[in-house]
Length: 258
Image (cartoon, rainbow, N blue to C red; front, top):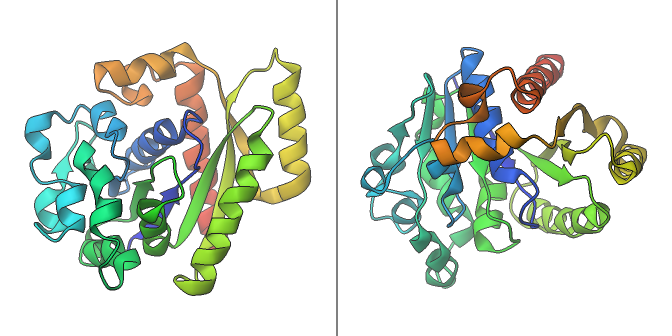
């Protein structure tokens, strides 16, 4: 077993990136796969959303990056069977500055995760909402990247910036980096704008956009405050069902690509 690593990335905040990382990882674990979620956002929302308290974050992504501990020492199990997490703390925001003078600084995460790939089917990286060194580390470690895209007016503009960063990473560090796909989030069927954005994005990217669309859903927003992914909080709600469908679509895509 050699884990496939997928970075979930978008430099814009509030687009459903962490929600997608947590619930996609949960849905894949529910399919019987061993999954590691790497919380690589200094806000640590993925860790909080999976009920990981401060006491379980003594070894964390920041200490792994700086070499103070190994990934194996930092990984903790979650309440979701077969899903583990490498948690984040606010100190991670300092890593951008602290690593800036180090040789091969773009590969710190990749090197740290290498020994863990034999234990998981998939490793999902929740990248921070920026295009700095942490996101570059996430993209250098990944085989593929997934973009959650909010159905709003400036969606495609932000995507163009992200694709420039991906292009730089591909040219200089990770020639194998592929786009896994784009997932439309916060879709409101009553809103004409959502429909227009969907039409635009599908027009530009075609089959690279998942058929599954994640709707705006109150239960999805509530779930993190209970320290649970929405699939455990309310499996029957529209948001949870959408993430189940997204996981199924991704795994079908993987089957066709092998």
